[in-house]
Length: 131
Image (cartoon, rainbow, N blue to C red; front, side, top):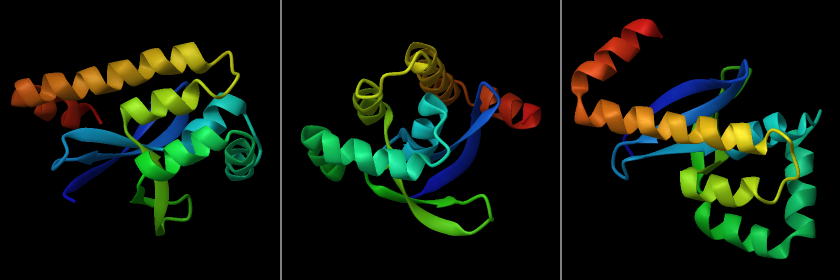
């Protein structure tokens, strides 16, 4: 998997992302998204409980959410449960949160920016200079 690793910000909170050039899509850290939507002190634990309560979601995630190598807060590379945009929308609908709608809009914006960069490589250069 050829990938471009990034950190995206949603309301000043980090979301680890990876662009998979082979599949032409973003993958987002599920735990990071859970943390943002729930403000949970332990988003990993929240995710485990969510998967236990919602058997269909658990099966969906097991099939559709691969482990993708991402950096942790300590700088180590770890395999992290990740979701593409479609899968992330499915996960988000299972979490009662007032942040869900703003997060969906942000997610659509991130995906749209990448599509625009693919169509116009000059945008990629401009974005890299801004980051």
